[in-house]
Image (tube, rainbow, N blue to C red; front, side, top):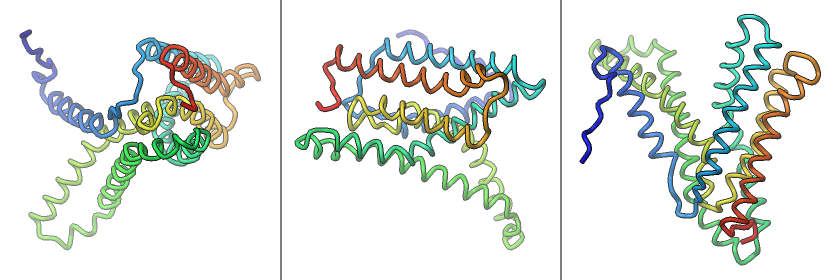
Length: 259
């Protein structure tokens, strides 16, 4: 049995605590939002292409922001947009997902629809966990902002309540980050319903995010060509990869939309 590797951060004061918090939040988020439903197809080539597209998209975004951004706002804007998209993606997925899933099931042959509906339990459970997590974290933030209630408690109870609120916020921030990341990556485990459903949802979702960013932030900076590349490059490339993934499922793994 190979020796167990030790985390070097454990030897650094405070960093070991931060590392433990992040590791704990990641472990819980992974357990809740990444579940194997038995019908997911893990294709290493698809994963590598998706990773390559993500890295290429990130580099293209940074390049456009660098050449056509405004000074110090370049990196701040790129980082805030990326983090904002990460947070808004699960919300848009909750809004658009039911319509896509409903259309996907209606498109299936009638004899397969009951089976597909019976597999909705896993994705619905994942959505419920995400909504519950966000609601609980928001409730803690409201409690933290309304500090007047502490004056009505005994000193020991007020101190304990404040400690609990701080602990929940410190642990909850990385947890919500990983929860949003995995919810968007797995499309709330909709592969439980059909292996092709995450690819279809991803293609629809990326356009919903693009429309949301256009309404919220307007057109990007730069000439018309750069604006079109920044606005349409991500959705078109993600859609192309999703269509290629669906084709590969059909030709390599024998999976069809109506099968």
